Length: 225
Image (cartoon, rainbow, N blue to C red):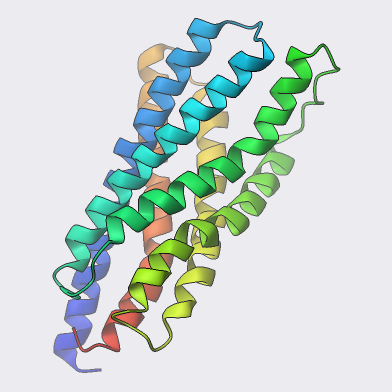
């Protein structure tokens, strides 16, 4: 790898990390705001249909997050692999699938509450972070699967590494997101809570971008972009 290529790789990583940080701030930030409004309007008592409607709304919001992520990622990728097409659409599909999977545990728990069953026991922060990492390990490759199908058309050699890279990225990213929620609820005042959430989501996006961005930079290096 030449010095020029190394500089381009570093420039790519900076742009990629920034794009992912902004994408999660905007995308997940919107999910957080709209989700909060939906929960407040629904109140504590939810029917089964109400729980399912909330879950569906959040999955669709996850598709919006995927659109923001895919669009900003594709803007960076266009400078390196102009032939890459359909990245944003693939990211939306992957995000919908990942959110659908991710909503299953909380939806089942809320359904138990709506039908009068005993509520699920609360767990501590270490267990929450472990569950978050596990969710990221599963949801990350699911999100990336549809991206990989587009990526392999222009970077066939080694493109499959995009899947484990996303597993690692989202294991860390989901842990940061869960930690953000834990910290935000303890911050006094609405402004402080909003600032904590915004910073946490941006950091989560940057962490995710740094991990799978390193893998993407190696793949793009193979194309001599």
